[in-house]
Image (cartoon, rainbow, N blue to C red; front, side, top):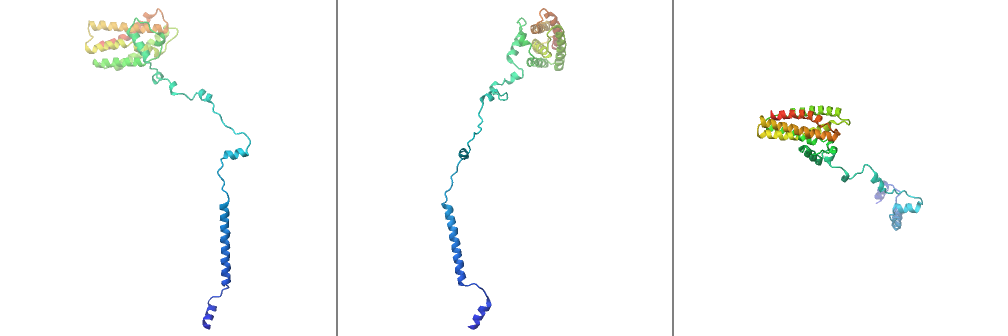
Length: 255
């Protein structure tokens, strides 16, 4: 027994005893009570509700706030804001007016009808291009491929008539106006080339028909030029070079 007591005393020497254990337990219990009291105090504190910034600022700030006011006059006077209803149609922006095209066509078909100078002075190339293509197409149906001659003579003839009219008139005329009038007056020649599809024009009837068509085209063109440029008393002087130009188209159609 003495040996065991000696072994215990020699195995491990420490200052720890039961009294120290009780003190550590008391300390942990006191720390737990302190931590629990803090949690209870935090839970018992009242939670602040959410207050909008406007209420806080209104209570603490006594100045004036800048509030931009809407100005309807600005939007009405702004050039960048435009409605689709006020935009012109696409054909009008392209310079295509079917009413004016129809009026010019009727003026050409009726040489005795007085021409409206305000309409005839417009640069409208939709109808002339259509009639040039129709003339080439009817010649093609008659077995004649003459598209190059039609376009070439049209361009050269417009240049010649344009130079002549600028020398004869005091106001002057644009090249587009001359091309428009000469192209519209090509419609009777399209009628002649359409007749060449069904029967030959190389004879007396064909020659007489070609002369009538040439007079028709030149009379209509000179009438329109006189009314558009205020060249009273000079219709025969204008009709002569126009007749020479349309005579070339008649030669293509007959032969």
